[in-house]
Length: 101
Image 1 (cartoon, one colour):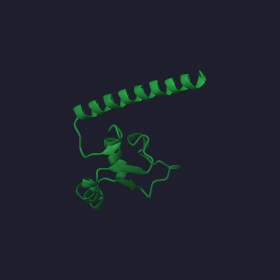
Image 2 (cartoon, rainbow, N blue to C red):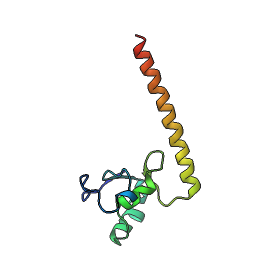
Image 3 (tube, helix red, strand yellow):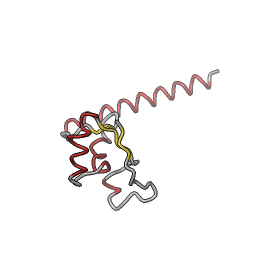
Image 4 (cartoon, rainbow, N blue to C red):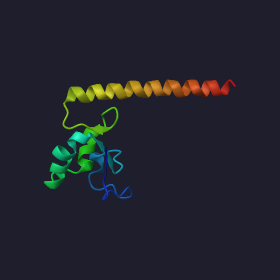
C-alpha cells in the first residue's frame, strides 16, 4: 500500500531533508502496519511518513516493514547491490545486442 504525504512540497524539502534522503512524498508500507504503526504514530504526532522513510529506503523494495535491526538492513543493502549489478549487466547486454543489429 502507498501512503501519500499531501503536505510534502518537492520545492521545499524542509529543515530535516538530510535525515530523509530521496523522500518523494510517498511511502510504501505493509498493509498490516497501517493501523498499528502508521495511524498510531500519526495520531500521537510522534512520526509521519517522512520519518518512516529512512527505515523503508534500504528495504530491497523500499517498503516500510516496521522497526528493523542492523543485520537486516545490511542484508537489504547487499540484496540491493546484487540487484543493481544484475540490472547493469542486463542493460549492457541489451545495448550490445542493439548495437550488433
